[in-house]
Length: 100
Image (cartoon, rainbow, N blue to C red; front, side, top):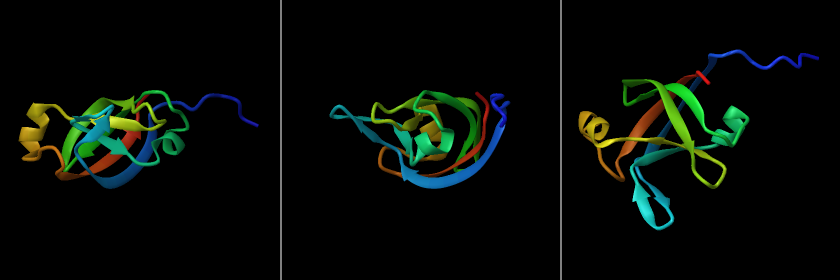
């Protein structure tokens, strides 16, 4: 049995489509929820990944915890403008690899 922790980066190549916008305590945050993330990463703690949103590369970004056991990726106004997207618009996410 190998008790040695996995070394990073860990390839993911996981893609999904989701809307921008998560309801956090009655407020809509400009984040994208990663479905099944706790199972995918094997943790409910924050992680760092290399990702792409609609083909735009986002190296070493943090996936924050949602408070319900999942993870979310924050999108700032500059990125949403670059994407031409806003709250409730669908985007395609590709999680390339976990870096931490």
